[in-house]
Image (tube, rainbow, N blue to C red):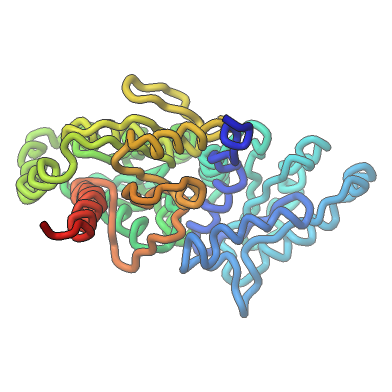
Length: 432
């Protein structure tokens, strides 16, 4: 085997990608990156590629992302005027709700104190300017997203808590990847799950809205902390007095049931939980069983994408008699779970291992993001594009993957991919 087949491009997404995603998900957020001109090249992955509706670049209004053109000698001589000028310009835009400031590796290594720069602007700008702790050398894209939430949780103005007739819930840690139907559908499903127990969703961090909607999280009695957002939820709770409830991402039937059960207990609504679950599951059961038995049973899957979906995929596969034989993650997993082989996308051998499974016909279905699709040679192996980034699958109506309706959509996508291969293969065979 040649060296080229053993080592390939990394699948893991870098820290700055997560910061971009957070800014993209807040309609009136601006971002200033302390670094050279190459800092904004990552925009190409989002605008008109992954997210058809992204407004981070605009034709009439100023772009929502800028860099400081940082050079070595500027730090050596302690020059910060350029950064201050850009931050003030961003914060003075009429539609600016918040400005985030973070640095590239060069700024971190050279000791640029971004927090001090931001502090010097306190009370001098109409929109708050917040420093996102830069972990470009040690973190990945989910770290970047989490640190952006931490900055918002620490400094974004919030509405004061007030009493209400029914429980109010805020959700922290949903990774809103784009302004298209998949994220819109997930936001609807998260809202539907909470409202089924008689509570009100006051704000989802993040859901594609602006800072005015995000400030409503101050009204919450309970803060649901999804995986990866525990710190942000606790920071918010310190400011608002809300109770923090750690719940799983509701991706899979079991995870969705666990999400509802945990929330029902916190809301003292266990008496209605069984009826709520029945209302969700009963209309879907027969169709899911048909798809599982007809197309999914006995199949072998490979997943290349967001690690937060790994455990749910293990459960999906187990529920329908399939097997997840390999997961390659785009971010690092802190907790390894029992089951199929897992490897991080920062392992340069991921591509060779994944390609071998495809070439040797040891997988029947590949579920992966747009980067995996561009690297793997799959020929006649069915592929479902899922997880960030998506370049081929664009959705204009709500199409969730979370919750019970999301489970129906997701299992339908997998079954369709396998059915398509079966159908086309039978049509290609000569009669007789």
